[in-house]
Length: 319
Image (cartoon, rainbow, N blue to C red; front, side, top):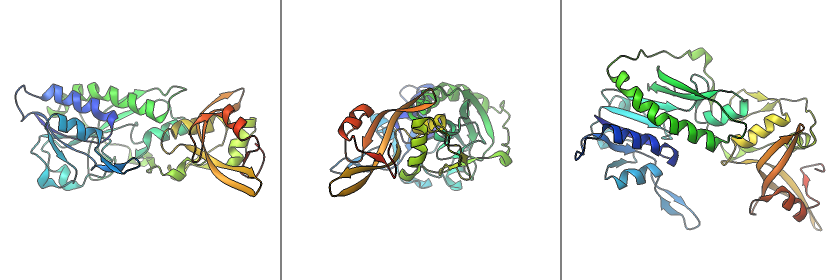
C-alpha cells in the first residue's frame, strides 16, 4: 500500500514512522509512506537561516519524495492520504488524488473544536475528557464523516505541548489498527452532528493577553463580575476566575504565552512592557505566579522578578 503523509511538526513523526513501518515492503520504494507534504522551509534564528520542518527532515533521511507546494502534479501516486497537523487547507482536487481518500487526525472529539486550535480550546474551557478523531476528509474544514475516535483525560498539569504530544503519540498505533477496517469497508462512517460544531481560529500573539484587572483579582483570590471573551473561540465567554486563568496560562504555553501589561516606574516616567506568565498554580483559591518573563529579558522565577522590579505595577494599579 502507498501512503502520502501530510504533516509538519515534530510531534506527528510517530504517526509517519508507524505507517511506514507497517506498510513498507522490505527493499521496495513503492510501498509504505512514499512521500510527504509539509510546510516549506522558513527563516529561523538571528541570521534567518532556512529551517526545514521535522517531517521534511524525516522524509529526507529516508529518501522519500518531499512536496512543499501543494500541486497535484507533484504528488506521487498513492492509495491513501493521512493528515496530521499539516497546517494548511487541502483543496478538493488534492483529496480526489487518492482512490481511498484522505484520513485526517484531529485532536478533539469532533464536532467540538473544529479548526486550528482544538487542544488549547479544550484546556481553556475545561472540556474534559478531550480526545482525537479520525475523519474522512471532505472539502470543508474538519467536516467529514467520523471513522473512529478515542478519549483522553486532561490532567491538572497539562499544557498544550504535553496534551498534544500525548494525543498524537497514542494516535499512531490507533491509526495503524484502524486502517484495515477502513479499507475493507468494515467500519461504518458516521456523519457529524454539524449543528453542534464549535469552531476555533488560529491563535495569534494577541490571543494570549490577560487583562491586568483579571490577573490582579486572581492573585488576590477575588471575583470579577464580568465575562472574558476568548478571542480564538468565536462567541465564547469565560468567567475570569482563578482556576480559569490558570488553565488559560497552561493553554497558551508555549505559543504565544499568556501575557499582560506591566508598568515599570522610572525617574523619567512610566514604561509599559509586556510580562509573560510562563507558569502558575492555584493555592487556596489564589493564583500563585511561578515563572515570568519581562519583555526583552530572560525567564525568571516570580520571586526573582519581584526582587529585581520591586516597584512594578500591573497596568493601572498596584499588584
